[in-house]
Length: 223
Image (cartoon, rainbow, N blue to C red; front, side):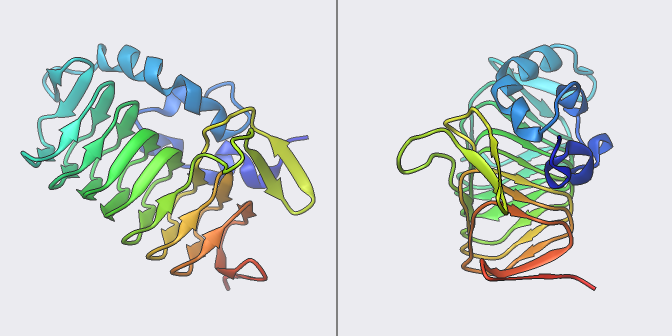
């Protein structure tokens, strides 16, 4: 039985990403993480050359995007329309960044999908993760993508445990999620759409949609 809190359709508006097709035939969103690299190369070679420019090996950037001269982008990567990549951003490859996004100063991305209108504007690390439409990570908030014991990541929702089969798996963040400053999303975290994470939180497991996460013992439903 599929966990409803982790279903792709309950987390994301798929029409708000150029990577919509990568989610086909998947039960859970983290299943696409190993597929991102090859998907970008295939998709990049099919992009409209009137909209996108190939600026390096397997790096496609929308002509309307703004890329700071000090930013570094390694392929494969796609940067969407009207997106801003700011000073000293570090995109390490296997990254799909949607339209109208902000990748901020000293922010690092690796093996990620950012839906449209995502903001990671200040000192963020996002690795082996997916951020849904209009999600926002406050300054200094990060995804932790490898367990300290280096074992495979398990997604925990109460007493239910879902094996991901992945050693590297950060967080799945649904649409319209606000992650407070200085928070850590530990490996295998799934944040339901419309939820808020208090600043300086350390989050593990599944947070249901439309929740306010204050700490692990105080998660309340929005009214």
